[in-house]
Length: 506
Image 1 (cartoon, rainbow, N blue to C red):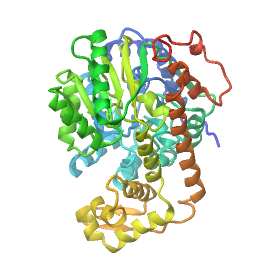
Image 2: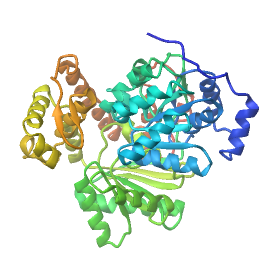
Image 3: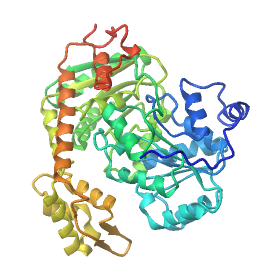
Image 4: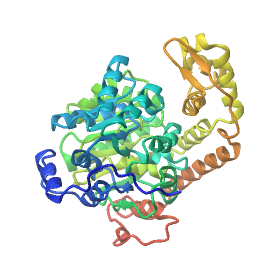
């Protein structure tokens, strides 16, 4: 079912007003490609799916309209560090913006929610988990009495789709939030999306098929290469070689991101780099927030040009001069790979992108797929353990469950997947004082056929990545064709291929 946008504003702002905000607030003299069209569409009350590569200026397409229109712009973002960065930059520009997430004290969350309810903030960033909290929904309902939530933005919208490379169950309820807000005009933003992911996003948010804005994904300044390696020592030497090559392009100390699938491999690299006296910082999910924040700030400022990170690092990171992105382990899909190398060369200058390919790493990704898709029996066992041991789970958390469920493999994260699913379904209720299971795993929540299909789909994505790795064709051409697969259209960016700079074209 498609609905007409619920426009609650006085109308589209004038071109002069838009230009005034562009120059006066954002200190920009002009628009990048497609920004103007998206902004005009959104200000005029239209919803859209916007696909713009990393570094092309997606944020402006909603931040500028927020200052042109009455009411509050609600932005759903998956990463707390990212929303803080966005808010800090907006405040420097004089924009009334804030974020609401679990990093804040209860009192501070309530204060910000109340300001949102009174319409005192123009842009509010929230995690998808937040709009499942009763106190936040109550603030949303209070906001309806005033200017209200005039627009909704879903950042990293590919997380909505179970067919995407980064599906997050908590995103699945974004459509319900949109309904609660009376279906305001909505922007769904992402850097990459296959045809099936585009379809899934539109269906879940009920955005019309014709409301799609898309820039070509061409990145001709990225020199992509695949290096066959065996074992840690060869990987380390290959990474050093890539950085040396990048330094000849970008200066004596190239700004470099090295991505890892496993934290254990990251630590091994870090030890080898320390032994070689190669300065670096690290970023991964097991680190305290304070250390992650410092690593990110050191890298962005240039104090530390090399960062070793898991894929959680990089979303929304605004650093134009990254000269090299190295994958020390195989990613799970071409979508994930292209999004991550998209953080290189955002200034348009040449950048190196190297995938260090060890066949053994494919096994790790196959295990990830298994762990990301636990069966119903596994989820029910987790539910039973939590229900029977609420105090111990409250005290020991995931470690207790993993000890009971997957003691044989400490890397098995099916427990985390099961808990995230239970939270997204509202079956796991956690407060400061208690933990309880609040329902049963019914057929409408869990479908084994859908689980099996999603798992098969992820396996196919991994297979296509391996085929791309072993291909002798132009690397960029292979990526472009992957994203066009099934659309039956010709893209001008394929003209002039091969690229002439990837390892297969040299």
